[in-house]
Image (cartoon, rainbow, N blue to C red):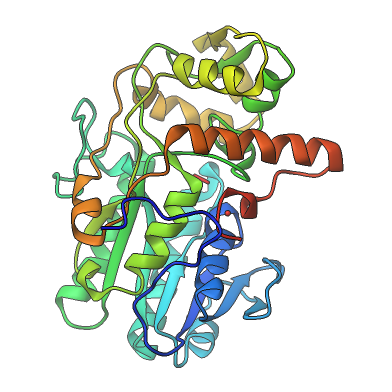
Length: 344
């Protein structure tokens, strides 16, 4: 069993001949997944509005609208899988996700490509830790309800024989390239490395699952090429949970800096910030994930597919190296630094 994929080694994706894949989105997840597929010898089309994406001889970057079913169908002709790694901003979920999901389901049906969706844990009820991929869906937020509806549409089409699909769910991302959207991303790690206090929207003493971006991309690439994944959801192989304070201490220790305090952002400060930012306003309804234990169970993914989480010390070492390299270069951390070649 391959409990942990060795860094800089291409994944064994189980295909005797190269396949073609379409990856929607070029953030940390989309880029990291595309690079893993390409490193394993597959041809990849990365689709974004701007035509951006990682640079690799097997990767073709295409500018297209993911909500354009006709265009995505054309791009998916002959493809084995369509990976939905898009990441609309929180405030646009209600308007952005439905047309994209409808287009990708239509493209999967018309092209015969499998639809592999990057999902999250918003779909489960509050206070249900540890969450398993087979748990009932009972979202306590509007964003969770949107994700449940998306999965409902996909699995209904699967059960009707129109498409073949799976969803890969992760907790909050950790690691190189997750940017400002990760709770332990650009607003957190650089402050610790500079020996400054860091802030978090919830309680820093509550246990939380953090899905390493390299493991997220590995899971997507493997499950997207293994038909045993189809017809249900799976969880990303994720390390044991840790509090934010424990993560901060481990980062500081590995970086050789004094341990720094982690403070909770007062609710009133978050509400005031929300007056000026639609995306910050959306954080209020997911605070429940950060004030009580929020823990996922990914044992079944390890058992079935042999995928294990990257050890935490390796996660932290790669993350620190990425931020320090980006600081020296004056650029944003690259998701490619996380493993073979790589949030929410």
